[in-house]
Amino acid sequence: MDFDYKKHTVDFYILRAFWAAFAFIFSLFIAIVFVVVTFEELDAFGEERVTFGLGLTYVFLRMPHELVKATPMIVVLSMVIALGNLIRHKEMLMLYIAGYTPIRLCAPLVMFLIVLLAGLFWINENLCGPFSARAQFLMETRIKENRDGLTGEAGVWIYGEGNRIFRAQTFYPISNRIDGLSVFVYQGQNQRLSEWIEADSAVWNPQNGKWILNDVTTHKLQDNGSFITRKNESLDYDLDRSPEDFGAVTQDIEQMSHGDLKKLVDSIREAGENPWMYLPDLRIKEAFPFAVFFLGMLTYAMMLFFSSGGKASGLGLGLVAVILYFMALSLGKSFARANAIPPWAGAWTPNIICFLLTAYFFNRLRQDI
Picture 1 (tube, one colour):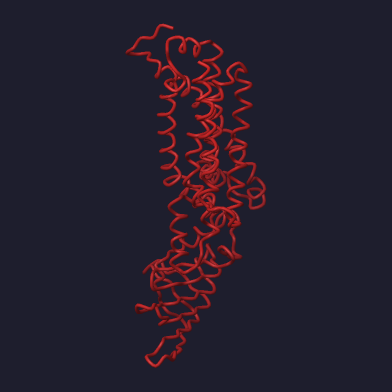
Picture 2 (cartoon, rainbow, N blue to C red; picture 1 turned 90 degrees about the horizontal axis):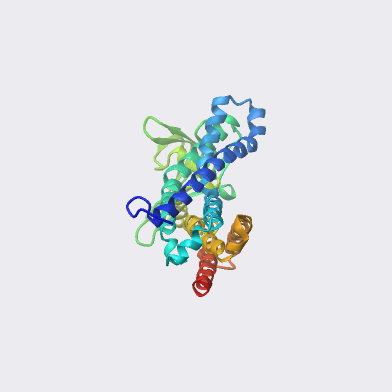
C-alpha cells in the first residue's frame, strides 16, 4: 500500500473506514429506534386519539435516550464492518508486514471511542435526561391526561433540606396539586423537632412560586416541651420545589440523567432515608458510557484474533459480547439491589471483564504476530 504521509496516513485511513461504518450503522439505528418507539406507544396513541404532531414530538423526545442505550451495539457493528473489510482486502496483513502492531493500529480507534465516550456523558446529561422528562410529562398530561394522580417510589416522595424534611403522597400533574403533605422542621445542634405541618392538599401558585396549603394543621414546640396546635384553611408555604420536581420523580429511573438521579439520592439521604434502591442505577449511569470503549476494543481484539472467520464470525462474536455484557449488567444490578454485592461492583464488573478479555486477546496477538 502506498500512503501519502500528508493526506493518507495509516491512522486517518483506519479512522475513515471506521467512521464510514459508524455513520451507516448509526443512521440505520435512528430509523430502527423511531419505528420501535412508535410501535411501542401505538396503542396509547390510538386509545387517546393523539394528534400526529403530538405523537411525533413524543417519539423524537424518546429517541436520544434509546440511541444512547444502543450505542454499544452500534460501535460493535461498526467495528465488525470496518475491520472485516480491511481484513478481507488483506490490508491489515499488509500493515502487519509494514511493521504496524495491532496495538499501534488501534490508536485512532481509541481516540475516537474516548471522544464518543465523553460525548455520551454530555448527551445523557443535557439531552437524554431533559428530553425523557419532557416525554414523560407529555405522556402523563397530554396523551394519557392522567387525573388519577402519580405516586413516587413506595407511594411517597421524600425530600430533605438540612433542617427540614417534607413528604408528599400523591401528585396531580394536570392541576399541579399534592395530596397528603407533611413538613417537619428541626432546630438546634441536636436537630430537635420544632415544627410539624400537615396539609390535606397543596396547590402550586405560579405567581409567587409558593404552594397554597389547604386544611393545614401546624404543631409548634414550646419551651416547656409541649406542642401548640393551630389550624388554618389555607396557608402560603415555600417548599423550594416546583411541580416539575415532583413530576421528575415519576420518570423512569433508567431515563433520568446522572445529575438528576444523584440529586434525588442526595435528597433522600438528607431526609434521613436510605437510597439503596437508587444506588445501583446511579452507578450504572457512571459505568455504562464506558461500555462503548471496552466493548469496542474487545471487538477489535477478537476480530483480529479470529480474523480467518471474516465478518460473519466477527458479527457473531460481537453480538455474543454485547448480549453477555447486558446480561452481566442486569445480574449485577439485581445482586446490588439484593445487597449481595456493592452497587459499584454490579455496575463495573462487565467493564472489568471486557478489559481483561481485551488484554488477553492483545497478548495472544502480540505472541502470534
